[in-house]
Length: 276
Image 1 (cartoon, rainbow, N blue to C red):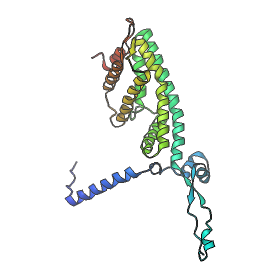
Image 2: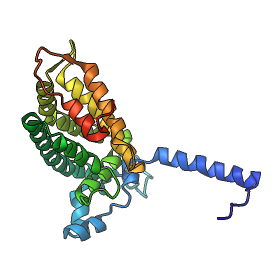
Image 3: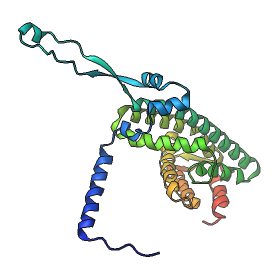
Image 4: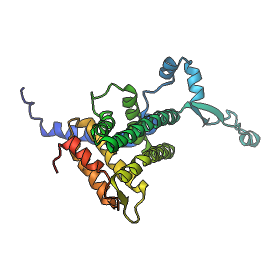
């Protein structure tokens, strides 16, 4: 592979100026700009509705400037101002909000299925001591964010919508509010998993720490890991696991149950091969 010729200082300066301009344009993008590819015609083709019907259902009312009178020779004419006309504008932010609502329903179902897998795996671990089901439950959640690891088109679509919504939330209070509401809902769905894990491990929350605090801390970590896996699919799960366990141990302490199982050790054995 041949190396590219060195660019002169003038060319570099030009590219730097264009890069600066690109960053400024990106910074100025609104939710509508981010969704510019979504048009009434494109939605109509996918939904079976006419583009005019799509535009009507997903539009907001704007007030068009009132037309000026041509004849303003008299005081009476100048005082007569017709009411502003209504103008319908296709509202892409509204499109994103309804897409987020549909996404929330899908994510709720996926979260419920994930929670069921974890609870079943923890029960199996208690009954047999076999950590494989628990490891598979963890892997199933990570695979969604690994390129090529899953053929679940719904999961990939959900991730894309979520990423666009996060970018658009910077300029939309309503989008940000809806994202927070959906995230809180999913977080509460997982509380039984943490509660069951505490019960099996014989550990208890430290003073001042709630079950929701524990869930949030783990969630913050896993959300970052999920994004990282998109660009680094070979990310070693053992590093993630060690960090999750560090959070778990940091926010909990041993209880009085001396015969409790150790799901953490089981996960370490499944993912790390028993190394400490």
